[in-house]
Length: 318
Image (cartoon, rainbow, N blue to C red; front, side):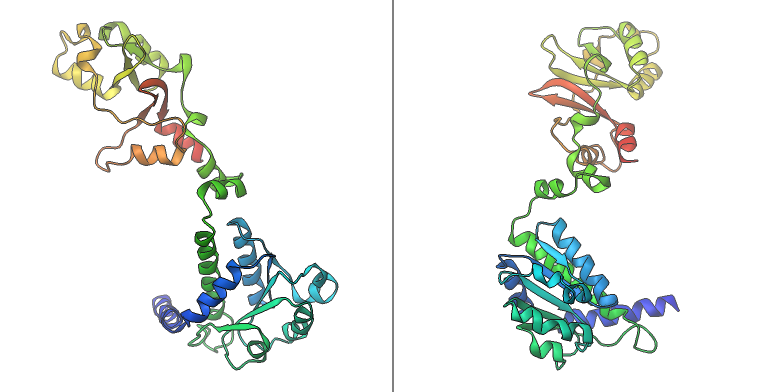
């Protein structure tokens, strides 16, 4: 039954995508882009929930928007409106009494009125400055009553407009970060490698001319799973991991301890700068799906400044 319902819903959504009037949609987008005031959303029931969600989404991505319930608006909150605002009404039928009661008072304030309906001949559509019909084949509800498909297409259309506004306003990742300082989203787009890297005296460092037997204590005590091999100028020359040690002992157990690190280290290594975001460092470490990197040196003008470990990234994301 679920498979059949999913397929049916897909057909209804395909009908929406195939039938929506893009010319009117573009006109609505231009109206929102050119809005000098605020964009207000309203609706009743399920449409009201969608209206509130869309207002919150637009706020978070750089558009000044608010949700204004029709009852609240009729009992004083309409006073917040100005001629520079745009008011968006969401209604499947376009005949919702609360919205029709509010409409003339919004227009009295010379506010631009846009309606999203699924019945083009509705009263709300006829009385709006601009109206778009969101094509609805029927509700997924077996009685064609419960707002199921109609609520989804309202949400889809609103989210598409929100992203279009982001693009038109050149809303950047840095702008997004300013609006989301907390939570997993905020952490993902604000925290840098510098915030989690091992640095200073905690770095497992050795020199190119050191012998393996003389640096095993450093490898063990720092517990980073590797040694970072530098020259006299602190330039990072290579990396030597626990795995390299095991392989070296298997191949040449008798003399390997007297080998210098410059002959044992891996010279072709990945690195990152400390200004990179944590998730970007993770992407570098997982670039080759057949060989994930567990330790990533942090460099600045080829000089070693830190080390990022995969388990630090994992702990950071928990």
